[in-house]
Structure formats: structure tokens, C-alpha cells
Image (cartoon, rainbow, N blue to C red; front, side, top):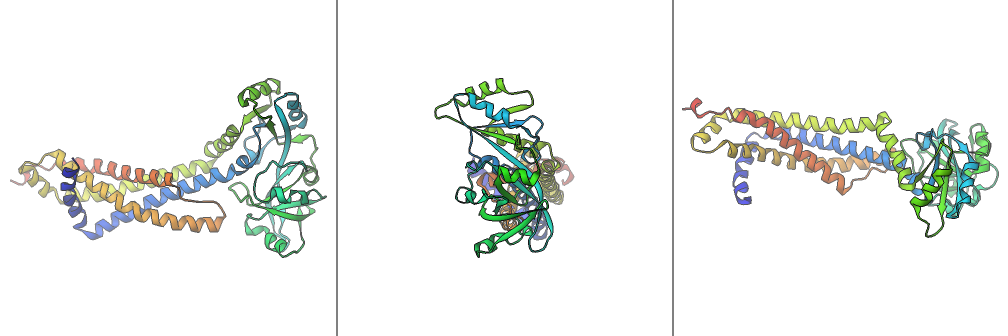
Length: 387
């Protein structure tokens, strides 16, 4: 079978390469479609990855959230008392509140304001497992002291470099002066360009919020406790406006919001589909033109005894060749654009083997569909038109 296919490939290749300009135009179109799909999928994964970084970094087994919360960055508060009531369950080893919000940060050097994401923890807490928190959080216990995310966008000022030089860094947050006592590494996201960590008391000073109102509750279970059983037990004691999630459900809760409840998730999916459609149109035009230009030759081959199935396979092989030749430069271009976009935005846009395989399959499918559409014209090649 493979030998039969290989025997037809030269015919498909010779037809494609007969007009170099048309071939290059087709490859450029397929490359563009592949790059567009790579970029859309890359940005989409960066969206999901960065908006769930905190969820994945918090050490805990179960999470309490308000039923009114849409996502981490637009949460609704509930009573801290509800969280502490879960300690009545013998399987609960620890229950910790988390306070979150967004306030204006004034760049200490340019005095320009920019919204910054702030998280507050109890002083004894070691919930957030990212580089720098465990080592430096003790320095944020003092009044109006904070930790600054060194991976925040540069618009917040050269905070990290100044601290590393031993300089004192003070900034205004919501018209209140705070001092940066240390650094951690979390990274920017589509929802937040920069991040601060501080204690629950400092958080309350910045937001002027009652201590009893929390955004999330984190529950750590005793060793050997059955996660689902404990979750079911806690759910029975919760009021109707609070829900309990496992860590996987907590991550899915955030991802689902950005994927289906926001315009940005739709835009990325639409962009990928658009790239696929563009590739189909371009490839179809090339293959259709090729078939039309060679109709007399196809009719002659039919008169010699070649069947429609044979000639159809030639056209489909042309589409496969185009997909492979167009995909390779598309992959190379996407790698370069990923590096450029990542350095410019601070977002972790990385190529993965799964994405390479997905775009390759879509590119082949795109060209294959184009071949199926183009070969309809092939059936009209009648030997009677020649003889």
C-alpha cells in the first residue's frame, strides 16, 4: 500500500512545483494559518495558566468560596466564622482565611498609578508556595509592610533592582504609604499586571475592610483523611451562600470563568477557527486552480484507464504535501513570536509538544478538506471533451 502511495507522490509533487509562484503563495497562506492557530492557542493557554497560578500555588485540600464569586479577581466576601466552624470536623487540621483585592499603586519614581493585585494572609501562614514567600513573609509582618512580586510588569517601577541594591523602597497604595520589605516571584497574568503580599492586618488597613469578612477559606486535612467524605460532611454544615471545592475544582472554577464567561476566551477560540478557515480557502483556491489548469491531462489519464479514485488520491496527496511544507515554517515562525510575545508581555507563552501535534493535525485536516472540495471539479474531466 505504501509503495503504491509513494509511486503517486512524484506526480502530485510535479504538479504542485510546476508553477513555483503559485506553490509559494499556497505555502505562505498555510504558514500564516498555522501561525495564527499557534498564537491563538498559545495566548489562550497563557490565559488559563496565569489566571490559575495562584490556585495551583496555594497549599490546601479544600477551598471555601462565596456562591456569588465569579472568579478569584472578582470575589465576594463571606464571614470568617463560617471557615472556623469547619475546625469542628476532626479531619480538618487547619483553616486559614485569604483576603484579596485590587488597589491603585503609585510608581515611586514616575508617580503614575496602576492597579495592583493584593493578597493578605495570617502572619503564621505559609499557604502560598512560590519562590520568596516562605523566606521573606516574616518581613511583611510589620505595620504597612508588603512583599512585591519581582515578576510584575515594569510600569510599577524598578522595585526589585532597588531592593537588591539595599535601597529603601516606599510606595503609595490607595493613598497609604507602604514599605516593600522583600520580593517573591509569582508573575503577571491577564487579570493582574503586578502583585503584593501582606498580612491580614495590613490588608485591612489598606482596604478599610472588617477583619471578619474574607474572600476565600483554605482547609488542610489531617493525614489519612478521605477528601470526598470530608467535603461532603462540610457541605452539610455550610450556609447556602458558601460552597466548598477541592483543589482541582477550584482551578476548574477559575478556568471555566475565563473560557466561557468572558469575551477574551471567545476571541481566542474564534481566532483559531478563523485561521483554519483562512487556510482552507487559500489551499482550496490553489488546488482548484491546479485541477482546472490540468483538466485536459486528467481527461487523458482517464482515457488511458486511470480511475477517478486514483486521480482523487493524487489531489489529496497534493494537499498533504502542502500541509507538511506549510506547517514547518509556521512552527519556526511561531517559536520566534512566542519568545517575542513572552518577553514583551511577561506572560509564560511556551510551545508544547501537545500544541505542536494539535496544530499539525489541524493543518493536515485543513488541507485535506480543501482537497476534498477541489476534487469535485476533477470528476468533470471527461475524455469525450478531448477525443
